[in-house]
Length: 571
Image (cartoon, rainbow, N blue to C red; front, side, top):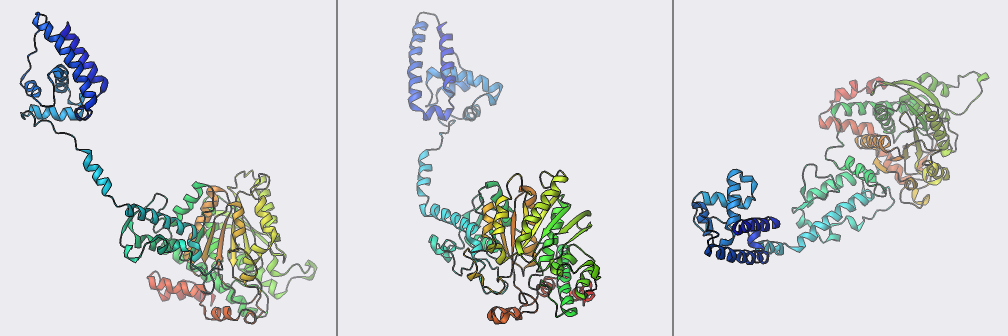
């Protein structure tokens, strides 16, 4: 009876602690307590044996070898025997350390050899102590450098096609973007650093050299796109934007997309050239210097139409209106040219000037294959007065179509840089845009930023670094882009369209460009901006620059540019 009691108690004690073989050796204080308890029980058993109530157990050969192990005590033999029997039936029923021990014993290893002690913690502590604290500090500095580029990289982006001004009117480089601020030098460029989970510049790689990190950050944030998004308070939103700009190769276009973009540039450029030759003395407020606006607007319409939008309400100033009516809305050219020839009957009234007129067109969208309706609201000379009118018209369309989330109807607003920062109605329209009774569920804003307001330099017309800073009141992301890089413009327009579809919030696209002529075609701008217009006189049109880029890349040849690219059709 006592022998059975001893066996049960030993089993319960060992199982209560759930100890493995290495644990049993490492936890010496607990093991000593178990030994003392087992020795007490063993003395009782010996007394029972002397009186004939029990006999020592007979162990098989493996158990005999185990009993001779230096780390075992004879008083634990019953527990070991029970574990051994359980192991023979199912090796997985015991801890892995005991499984390894029993296998060694079964293989015939001698006492003292079957057990392998666990590795000492002293080696680990020595390794931890040997890590250079400077390495940890340098990794933290690189992570801070990445965040600085995400936050302030747009300040040194190459945005001005003329290379005269910085878009933020500040030619200095923020110290946060300098390696010296973090005590890093060019000698560290070949060192590898672990990328934080707050960036996507590595793609599938989690480690990059400092040189690769800087190269990728500058290409994303300091080349022809300046991304302002770190003022957003919603983590999901700024991570979404970061992913759509930092992911490697995300901005690349396919050859077919490049050819379509080139054709749209041709139509935009040649339309203005035709009007200039046909009516050289007429005011038309042409788009020369920002011809990429037409492909940009068509890209937004294509992307949002593919996402389900079928009605677009557009408000804009006079610059580029005729080009948009012809190439975006596809109004009949005869109707546009009649405005120049003054051939309308007198009984219809004189109406407004041609660059204030609106139109409503229903047509097929070639990209999505769906019918769409485009409405351009007529606009008087007060440039931004049309903004609340467009928002009200959009809201009415959504109301009568029961479009409660803006999935079918959206507004697109075009602005000049000086008017956007200088007219209070812009702020007022932004301020009520999020109210439940007024919201249109997000608008896409284009700034035709020709870096001059009539004849006023931006350094003397606003206090804010950018003309777009007013949009920050509604936490709108702002994408500054060099208008002489059409592919960068296309990517920005794609991201803006997807942003509006996903978050139903405003987004601003700042097309940094120039005005090839004066405020209108009859002005002589060299009197007020002589240095700027010396640069403009030497600047090639964006169509010519992009054609040369495609030829150099092997996407098209000279024959395609002149014949298949439709240049000959407009010449």
